Length: 357
Image (cartoon, rainbow, N blue to C red; front, side, top):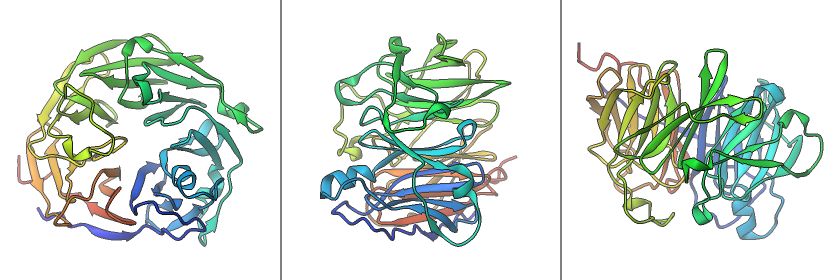
């Protein structure tokens, strides 16, 4: 099977200019949209055809370093119950954009936030649960557990968001995801070789339904409609500096039953993926778990048994840094924090056929 990447215009044009190294900060798939962050420049909202529809390219700061952090986006989340899509930056500024405006087809337009609030800085993982945000606590000091915000649908003015700490018994959380559980929602949280699943409640999160051990350090969770896929790096004895991402190696993955945490599928990454703080170098497509290497290789694994399937050719002869990827259907969109303002797209429709029966 031939997996070939196509370069996509990331549209880094901006009214903001600073000394930020050129790269991609986040890539997400929303309902009917892709969105991405050109580090230090803007946030782009595009249709599934990857044509930009709306762009936010303003900063609250004129100074070089603060403007870099302002447009260093750690999360882009759809909050349908509040009618907004929110962005959360490195400084802890939460901006809400009207969902109908960024989804509207037509010529590319600049958008402005409906409101801006502040919460804790340096939140690496955040998810929407109902009309609240749930996020990992700031990395500095290794604060344990998760925070839950007040209802976003009640916000009408600027100020600081009210936060409550929950599930601090989990310790420091490095992986986080929310997904439907029938008519309800659940949150998967992981760290220190453990994965837990907790139900959402009207006030945030209930006690963990189960906690299981995995043989890697959880960094990412993905949901395929039936199983929770956890993936991460080798476990390390000592903390690795945020800028020493090349020191993150190996690791593996496991597909867990949301009912009891039982492992249904597992595998190991024989090649190093493009891990790093906040990175998302894995994606799910029909029939395949996909991992992205430092030089842009795409490694695929069979979701039936975790067996390796294919490897695509690299797109560079050197490390591109940390990968950020998202999938919609068989379409995988990804970029790198040191790979320039460039995105790459691969269609992986043939993965499930992969030459195996």
